[in-house]
Image (cartoon, rainbow, N blue to C red; front, side):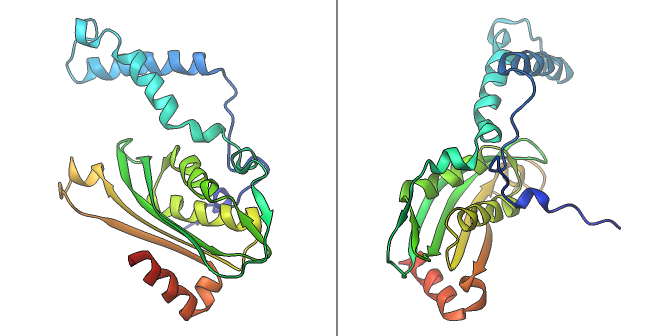
Length: 210
């Protein structure tokens, strides 16, 4: 059985961005028409007062929630890379994320911790949160989102190692299917010295809980 391609996990010149060929207005119009069909499909009347503008509103909302597709990593970082003789761990934790599950198009929300050990270069702290935001504003699965954040930091400043841990609640588990409110999914990605050195990994996991 053929294995799925992992090319999407490697940042390219566009920073994993895929600018659409059509204009935003054209895409919004097509999505609004599709939402109208969905409303009819569930037995609603898309012409009643409360739903008249729902197709347009939803199209605009989904465009905003997936705007990460057209953001390039280089533009997100925006030259916020600095030469600094710092060789200890840098950790930003409790970064809020929200994304859309690509399987059901419903949200999952949570927090992410991002750490790296510099190798002569450091990244502006806010850019770690911006990287997480960029990749979360796409249709995602949590496992891929976690790895994309880690790989992006690795590509940006070539540190000695990168660690990312994400905890999230998925509405596809709480509102449908098994319906288990409170279930939390934890994913991690360890690169470089975080993967090869147990003490470094343990320090990161300890600092996450402080």
